Image (cartoon, rainbow over all chains, first blue to last red; front, side, top):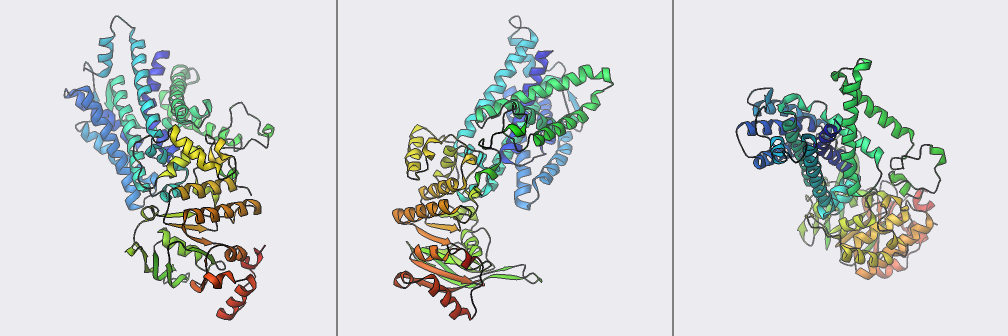
Length: 320
Length: 265
């Protein structure tokens, strides 16, 4: 059971990494995610059903997600549409596309198909129990992707991408086209989301067009939980806490599903609970005063010494 | 080096809010010029900078850099050879990133690749450069820029811009938001960098004394026009009183007692 939560948390963690890139690093609230997640799942299900290899399947899913993100960024850049609307447009169009990808169906089961799950289980048969094998595999996978992402954000391009959400004027002043950065950032984000969808479809044993419903909210909740757990400005810690947040979120959802029925909760209530969770997290952040980056232990704003400058609020940078 | 021909900018043309910010401005900036620009609010100083930097396209007229027409080039392309510092110290740096990351981003202009350039050699180089600011920033390279004061941030922005060796720097009242002590510090650094690196610079200021004290050429703007352009010997002999007198002669009205006069401290 606990292994299941971890596995789910890590699979969806890839999606949360994508959400983190757009919402937190680029400051580009991207709703494409609700469409690119099932897109990754649909591509994977169809390609597995047609006996393609695992490597090419995952690569196509990754590329498909990237294409969806690029589409959103292009709509935003070229037509000067607000980023929220651009994301909603792509997401809506993707719903139809996903049904096409699935072959005019709303879902496609992967029963008795060779998936990455069955591969892993085959490989570790007799060595590790089923749950632990999967946990180990996805732990490795998530960490490899996390470390690759960390390395990317240490490159010159990655650093510039980091400055983008903070201060677009500065990026422009360095002779960098912000539109290109948005295309790269949103593309990368959705590629990760689609990859997450690809693994989720294999883990759950089916792909469904509605798999993405509420994914963006789940991702956002995970990001926010992670921010409560750990505070830092180091990219290593930032991506780590995204994964931790995702696992915590899945844990909470599990509790909701498992124990919720004692208080008459049904699985369909989980969306509501997720939304309320985000509202509560936002409220706590507000109540903590401007302490966006302060330690969790500092509960009372009154005790904050005047000398402790706040890294999160740029206003404090000015001497006025 | 920079030639501006008949530059005009009209906001909301054809409406009741029509506002002519620039009226047929002609200006040639020679290499090595340090031009100070004065003028009351709404004189068109910042609009002129916006047109030069590409932030806002002009309604009419042309801008040439080394005889190449750049009037329609987007801002990010011109930023490769034009450096600009704004009044707001927050606009030049990314608050939530470490000082060294900021310096890395500004180290080279243009599109960035997938190389990891921030290594120990680079850090040493940044450190050496930061020492000349004499603000102790060389020991805070891992700190977020958001922790620095406005003066420190503006000095850092200035340093980072100078290190990227722009052909022209535009300073848009870059000391106006700082307290007097930091303002004079940043201004001194500006002067220092400009003479040491032989930069071509244009500086908008509300402070007439600064405008007279610094630079080799002074422009006075009013209602979207350059009404006074003095340089060399003539500029060295200017005083605030003479400048106000000149304005009176040209415009046949007294200089309103706005910031132009008030900031004369």
